[in-house]
Length: 175
Length: 131
Image (cartoon, rainbow over all chains, first blue to last red; front, side, top):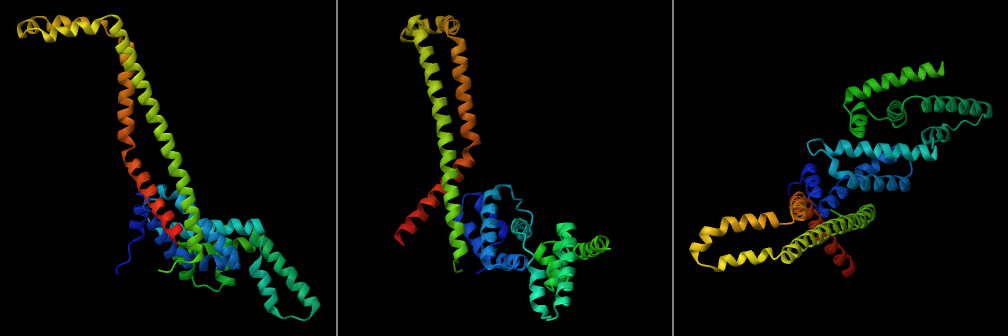
């Protein structure tokens, strides 16, 4: 059976078909959950973010342009909600996770590492959010350019440019 | 495709939101339409009342006469009736009628969408009550 296109489903929802929206939710729920989990590292919170995303989508669906790709829009608003969640919780999950894995027993070294991590985190907080996100997905989550581009709904060249600018910005802040 | 917990929660919230939104829209729409109908009714009743008091409508008895009399006098009769009409009241009534027609026409698509949503919401409620 051929899957109904996203754009057709969006048009159906605009015409009052609520079941079409349910199909969209079922279709994208897992993908968005995986995407958000990488950003916020909390399965329960990721579920809340995904729920918020879909509810926001429903409320604004009349304004969506059916000519444009729904998936890009969906990932974009999901990312925004995830970032809002991180801002409200001030979570530094990737660096904390890195510290736990390091396994250094030397207290001096641990302190030094902690201080370095703090400086890097402070620098990341200063730079633009879109650059910070690319840095974290590339270095902490070890994703390729193509994977990052797909996650964020942007072209691969944009990811390359953002990464280059992120490194330049970090260099300026840290030096 | 299997419905997960997230889907269930999202659809519950969406259903509640849509129910509230659609009912609110319908209530506003019905209020506006009923208000306009009431105002139109009042203006035409007022017009009839004025014409009745002036005995203007008695002039219409000419149309019970012979064909030759009607042919000869209908223009003069019509002119008198037009002069005696309470023009302001009638104008208001006509404008309100036009407004009602315009509102009915421009909300046609929206009414269909709201109707479809409410029907689907009712089906969902019935399905969830049966479970």
